[in-house]
Length: 514
Image (cartoon, rainbow, N blue to C red; front, side, top):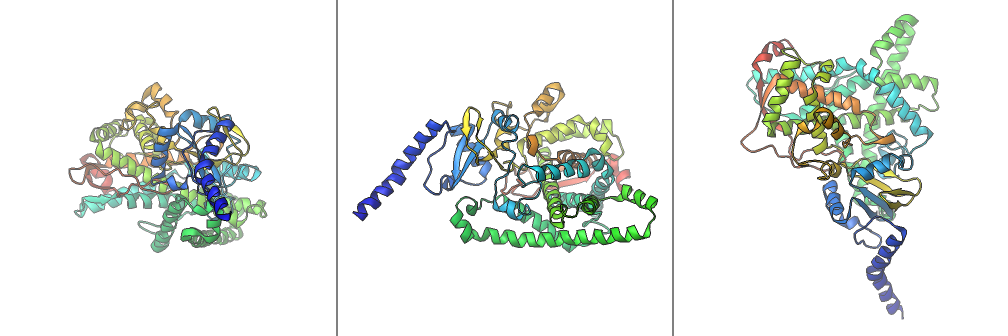
């Protein structure tokens, strides 16, 4: 009898359960779904790179796809109309974040800007980010930092070329550039190049950011099958805990240093001089410490560290990788590179590009937009979670469903784009091109869109424009640059970019004076 019941249970789970599940889906008007397994759901189907595999599934089952990752219901969005559905009329409903291990550890117990769920706390830190830290005025105040760091990179490249080096590995150079820029704005310090603070410290923290991005982009089975979370299957949580401890030690040291310096300044300067100094040299840490003085119970060091880690993680790898993808595309399309160079020669001439010149370089912006379309560095936007039942694209989406928007798939959708896999910056030119830009969502959309998008575009524009202006660039060898995509939360190239370069004759004077 026991054997009979056991066999009956197995038959139900492996044969009748999938059938009953599909009937339930039709009755509840859920999005289509591939066959799943008990307990695991669709976890067994997932392959890397995840955004590629989810695109394959969506091509088969439809642009709105229902999956189950263990015990967690998930909806995959791969069409622009459905994404707009989620981030317009249903924007508040999908403004939450799911409670994942990454948010618990890297998001300071779900309190950071990236991982906090929608509510008064999130609205407050979002306001701080947009008004106090990433406002146009604040970003403009630090334009000198960005210009100095970009020119420092040009100086290093020029010196290397003078000593006979003609091949450069660009990924590490871009990473150092963006790290210096972000640390200059956050703490008034630089870690690479001349007059650096601590090269070894910078190397360790860059490793923390890179490994953190990899861990956040790794599926943790404990997030979806609770029993595996207790067992810490694969040791993912232990790695996160160790990494966050190292990150917090680095950030706490910066906060303590600024706090000591601020006390010293307060005790030695008159009020008028102090106000003037604050206006000129107020870093992001200084801004947050000022807020802490007014509300110490709310703006704890933990909240400040969460804000700083978000800025560093979002502002370093993303801009560096976008610049690397853009340079890779330009090397594979020398005609586009020549067109960008001609635009710079006409509108800037034989002086170094400045941020104020970016508005006069529409084709450069087209190149950046086309790079973000083909290679969005967060191909799957950060996950959202529904706070109540809603309707998306005519389907019911239950409360507590995790939402994944596949920006990579939307940016390559043949229904939206002509020749979607081709690199054509010209598609963004003119009034019609401006309409094309509405289909781009590399920074997300709605309430949870990235508040640092403006800073990122300035940083990439300045770096890319200066590289094109100052040097001639060629591929290493006859073959095209390998454009294979890597894995992680941000999407690196599998092969770091190497290129042959030499100073342009028209820029020799300027480069020699750096």
